[in-house]
Image (tube, rainbow, N blue to C red):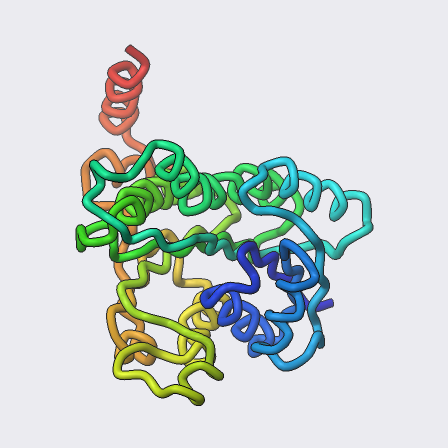
Length: 274
């Protein structure tokens, strides 16, 4: 039976490429959408419902995502082995001192918390039920370092840190965690075909990035950076986590640890437990 990808943020300009990528590798899709309007929008951009199961849920409400996983466990929705999350909304107004706190909290919820909810709701299922091929892929944005995105830049920085923590905590699990770090414009094919575009890539082109992540089991604990069209066709892959003595020790197989290694790990653990 074909694998299934759970896509959170399915009808957006990044969710659509994820669905196209899943189809290309022969996987099915379990798409979390807010309502019938989102479903119709998604179908316009992917062409048909072939291989897609829809379920309703608001990704900014953690319980909605927990309910999706509960329905999977109950056999009401298909099992999934892969999760792709890309939830967000642009609010580029500035300067940031002029942004009221209600807006700030709302933007952090949709641009950061929703992806955290996606991870919290699904990771235990992936660890326990998804098998050796399990993946969790999160989209983060280049606004984190560009600085001109206002609240979006702040949320993007938090997302990049979340991706690092997820990566670290799954270094030795069955789940391949990867981050797609996007500093490029991606839009629906129909919009570019109708209006043209001076910059940016079609969703169908960008789909290749996630397609490669699904196909290649060697892509693990990685950041895949996309800054222009060329990065779509020749993936720019680097380790998500920096090189350090501590991380090198953590990555070591238990049976290969020396006494000095064990002592170092023990001392480091003691520091973090203070």
